[in-house]
Amino acid sequence: MPSLTSARRAPSPEQLRPHLRPLPGAAAADDRLVEPLGRARLALLGEASHGTHEFYAERAWLTQRLIHEHGFNAVVVEGDWPDAWRVNRYIRGRSDDPSAEAALSGFQRFPTWMWCNTVVRDFVEWLREHNHGRRPERQVGFYGMDLYSLYGSMRAVLDYLDRADPEAAARARGRYACFDHYGEDSQAYAHAASFGMKGSCEDEVVQQLRELNQRVATLMAAPSEDRVDLFYAQQNARLVRNAEEYYRTMFRGRVSSWNLRDSHMVETLQALEKHLDGLTGGARMAVWAHNSHLGDASATEMGEQGEWNVGQLARDRWGAQAVLVGFSTHSGTVTAASEWDAAAERKRVRPGLAGSCEDLFHRTGEPRFWLPLRGNAALGELLRERLLQRAIGVIYLPRTERASHYFHTHLPAQFDAMIHIDRTRAVQPLVPEPIWHAGEPAETYPSGL
Image 1 (cartoon, rainbow, N blue to C red):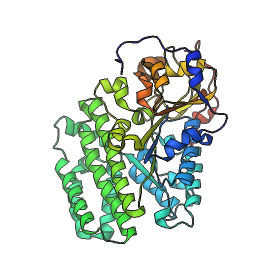
Image 2 (spheres, rainbow, N blue to C red):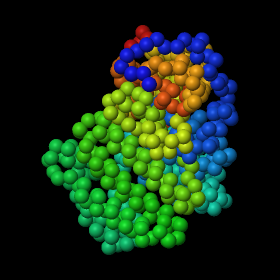
Image 3 (cartoon, one colour):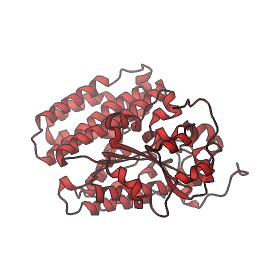
Image 4 (cartoon, rainbow, N blue to C red):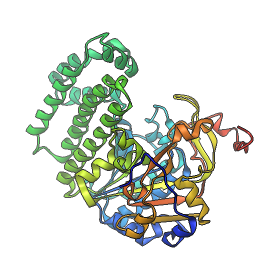
């Protein structure tokens, strides 16, 4: 692979055009795209932002087809484990929530629109309808793989043990009391533990996970419903252990915390695979997360800086059984904030920068298409040099877009396929957002900056 530290001439739109696979309708209608996903163990479906309607919709349609025609039985999202489990219970008919919107209301951590939006709501209702009347082992599950729910996961462990084993619950409370000084403020714990202001809670969370692991080992022959509840508690204890380490190392730098977070995500996928293999005879998972997590980091500028991610680790673990699909857009609108924990806004997305994938794709003149990158030697040669690629997370800063949102990548090594939708619109939040609902953003580029 060429070095990512020096730019060379990008291919022309005319050179790229013969390789495009136009999408007159939904990507899920293209058999050539769906077939390799259908053969995979993991279909990793990305997004170039956390707030674009089309990315969510296309992933939902692709996932529905994978469930219907190829036996996929799990949707795993870049969300917190306890909040996703509430949705999992709803779609399986095991909760008191009256609607998908109510089930999704557990996603209260910023950014709420990431999972509390109209596309996800409709997809969750579809999952519930799909599961209705099916035996539990034939139902599709909905799971979270992120690790921010430190305190929520502690409560979930205690709730389970209060029901299953009060004496074990008392031991767990004693261990988790180590966090009582921080008032459920993960950032406060991160600061205190990182700078030696107080001792860490590492030993306590490791001991609690070890005890739950031992409990799992002794209850392997328990009824399936009991094993499901125990697995939920075990995963929460694992999350507490990993989140404690994440927050303890947060101030050591981006690379360390990023790598811990993505390692936890892959550990969750592995745990789910083992759990579902035992219950259903085979796990097949559609994974929804940002391109920056699901595209192979070793093909990007971040990989040169020492980062790894879910896509890279999935290829290491599952090989060709993990298929990586990225998404991109050139312009439109996006739901994002201007700073952390701020209100959601409907922002205008600037046209892709010169020298970027987005600009190259736009100049082909094709409004919707996908590129088959896996095993495509001619396309690999054409795209052998690095290109800029845009990544919009929960914050979008158009004024500093080049520095804040672009990085270099070698596209054919990053993804197996890339779906481009030239103009897109902001995803609609379920939670009332006064600024977002104030109306369509004004045309502010380029002169309005």
